[in-house]
Structure formats: structure tokens, C-alpha cells
Amino acid sequence: MTHNSTLPHIVILTGAGVSAESGIPTFRGPGGLWEGRDITELATPQAFRAQPHVVQRFYNERRQILLTKQPNAAHAAIARLQKEYSGRITLISQNIDDLHERGGSPEVWHIHGELLKSRCTHCGAVHECRDDLDTASACPACHSTGKLRPHVVWFGETPLFLEELDARTRDATLFAAIGTSGLVYPAANFVHIARSRDARCIEFNLESSDGVFDEFIPGPATQTVTAWVDSLLGHTH
Ligand code: APR
Image 1 (tube, helix red, strand yellow):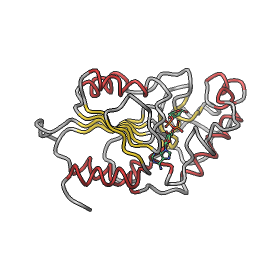
Image 2 (image 1 turned 180 degrees about the horizontal axis):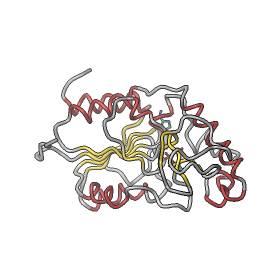
Image 3 (image 1 turned 90 degrees about the horizontal axis):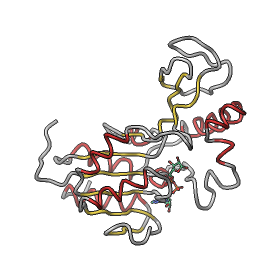
């Protein structure tokens, strides 16, 4: 697909806040997933080695909840922008849900992996996964059992696609962070890369991360992102 290079190259980074209005809990803040839970017991390779059934159950529950949820107007607006904007656009998501895809996004860079995929710790194969994973689960490729894990990036592991996304963010002229607390690196570094290249940086959130962005657009993403996309595409939908 050829892009109109005279238009801004937009890089969008989404976090849990873009899925909040779909009923997917965020991590931090009231009712967040990490509230009352110990991350080191649920989302680290060490936890998976020590108590795989506890970790599998945590992700099995989240997977089954995700399958009952629907994308919201913010996902739909971002997808519309990806399809109708004639400049270059990159969508990076910290989220492991598939709501961007189900909202119509043609391309999503999931730097923290995907909840609806499994990865075999024996052969490395990645497959679609909508069922519970447990010690009896067999890898569709090598058929070994008890070797499947969620294809997600745990704390202490390296996020995916960083080299490609660093390069794309360096090339951005407009950077939008939507629904992220900006507390987890290296995802939280993308705005600093964009700023270093004089990109305009906009934050869509309920509360502002003071001082990092050029512009803060307060409010729920279903409203603010829809209005932003309408303004970029020059029409209401
Ligand atoms: N509209 C816009 N923003 C919202 C909304 C909404 N409706 N609801 C919540 N938010 C904002 C919150 O104000 C908060 O800043 O979304 C952000 C969610 O922050 P976190 O819960 O920290 O989620 P996130 O930033 O995605 O976390 C990053 O941390 O635990 C890891 O791997 C996990 O990918 C996750 C990473």
C-alpha cells in the first residue's frame, strides 16, 4: 500500500484504557487486575515454572472473559483511521486482547503478545488458542503435552517487535498514546523516542501524565478518539 508521505506518519500506542469501556479491566487504578494480586505470582516466567496451574488459571479466566466482550467505539475509530487515512499509520498495542482486530484493525503490533494464542515451550510453535490451557494441553505442532503457555510477554521477558517499532516511532510525526498509564517500559519509552524526533505527542486518558505530552485530551476513549479520528479524516461517521 503506498502512503501519502506529505501527511503525518501517525504512531498510536494503546493500553488497557482503550478496552476499559468494553468491560476488560485495566491493571492499575480502582478494580484493576493487579489490585490485591501479586504480579510476581501470576505474570513472570518464575511463577510459571513454580506454579503453572495458578498462572494458567489466571490467563484461562481472562481468556474466557475476553471471549464474552465486544470492541468499543474507540477500537472502531482507530480501525477506520487505519483504513481511510492515506498517510502512514502504525498501531502498537500493549493489550493482549483481540478487540482491535475485532474492531476492524487490519494490523496490530502486540508488543506484549496475545491472549488468544498459545506458544509451545518445547518447539516454539504459536497457535490460535480459545480454550483453557493446562498440563494436558498438547501442542498442535510437536504434540508434546504440558508444554503450552500463553503467548504473552511476562515481566522480565522482552516485548515483541521492539526494533521495528523503535524505527517506526523514530519516523513518526504524530504520536498518540491512548489509555495507558505510561508506567511500564519499554512501551513507555515510545513517547520519548517520538519527542526526540520532534513529533507532536498527544495523550488520550482520563488523567494526564503531566509534562510528557504536547497535548492532553481528557475523557473516555470512546468519545475522545472518535472525535479525533473524525477531525483527522475530515468527516463525521
Ligand atoms: N478512556 C481512556 N483512558 C482510560 C479509560 C477510558 N475509558 N479507562 C481507563 N483509562 C486509563 C487510565 O487512566 C490509565 O491511565 O487507562 C490507563 C490504564 O493504565 P494501566 O491499567 O496501567 O494499563 P496499561 O497502561 O495498559 O499497562 C501497561 O502493564 O501490567 C502491564 O502488561 C501489562 O500491558 C500492561 C502494561
